[in-house]
Image (cartoon, rainbow, N blue to C red; front, side, top):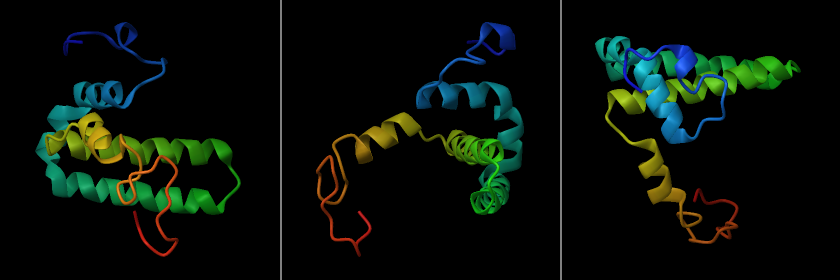
Length: 114
């Protein structure tokens, strides 16, 4: 999709893969994101993580879903600014199972972070 494509021509309202989402976020916000840089964008992510933490303590399911979406969107934004392909990174790290034990259902000891 080119930068001149209107939102009605894009994937708005459709199900998005991670690759679609990363491309979609880049097309909407990249110029602003690059100007803000990784450090500034990271601060926005931390604010959203705080809002997610508050939503997890509440009982508003709609707000909870919105905060999860915001955290993912800001994480994707940082990946765009840092020039990281999230689909490739996720596939490489988790595409063959747990990165610790390499099993589809993790068998790492409970106290270990896989």
